[in-house]
Length: 491
Image (tube, rainbow, N blue to C red):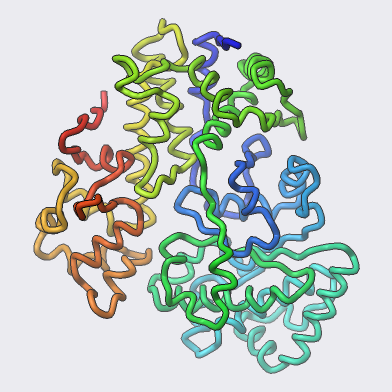
């Protein structure tokens, strides 16, 4: 069945796609922006304790959504009444500085410096949440966190009894308390404290697995999960080997775009009717939000929708690539991961550029405009990596104009003589490169620094050992690809 859309109406709807900002607090997004990727279903399972996701994958976003009763209920309803329906959620650490539910990073650092065990600190946080969840008095309710942790340590047997009684009460009521942990990279500005505090939280999570109705969920970055020191405690493999990746497939990313189009004010009804017809399933309405049917995630259906919105190929025939597969290929990092923010931005900019340069084009998106959308997404992704890892940007800016693949020597030779000594300082109030600052054998070496860049998926090694860079970063840093197509220029 052939799809066709009014190009101007579709173009405007694509131009109106939201620019997703990084989640910086515990306020959830509007329900119309709550999309559940197929690959995130495992993440939502109550026994999925460790969730690993890169910047922009949705760690803090899911923390805010799950912590909110209305949003959690909305998600549960979309999933047909999942186990989330009986969940009471609280945040054990996240993007909040009020200290109402957990200590701020400064407080945590002070507690660790005073010799307090991170496991005891987090145990105190969880006990407070558990007592409040069953509406029982908290013995240290009005205390500062230092005093609260001291009470927990001094009254260990009583604390364990309270935890057991509350767990039994939750089970009798058919409820589960889910305690969410996020933003571990903000626990401190040095790896040693981050490791100790993260490891302490994970150790507590392991202990709580024996409880019937108390669960923990930890959202952590890949570089922290890959740090073996974090997992240096007995039976850590029980958690680590059961980790779940917070990843986005290309089908889920297209589904995200389609969800927004289906909820567009003017274009939405036409889009829902046409895509419902081609997929053989109707969109549902929940809380005033139109939810796309699962059938819309099939490759054949998605490809037909994309080809009704954009040029089928990237110009000059199939040799340039089919648009449907070209877009995700050029937005992925070295590990094949794509940020939903990059996807939405690429299509948004493509629509704006088509309207500016090809307003009479027969489809919503011109292939050249899609290239420009990728350029814009690359620039923003470079800015994002610079925000989370400030030390990365000056190193790769020094390689601007270079060609990849390149050798380790070719890359490190572009770094100024004093640049290695400035790397840790360049990190500012964010974590410095892990291997470069902590590797006992290669600390301070270019090789360790390059391994840190590989770990972040900014670089990857080819079969012959040279260094290459995925397009999402290569274009933004103005680095050429040897023997390949030049990066598209901004117009």
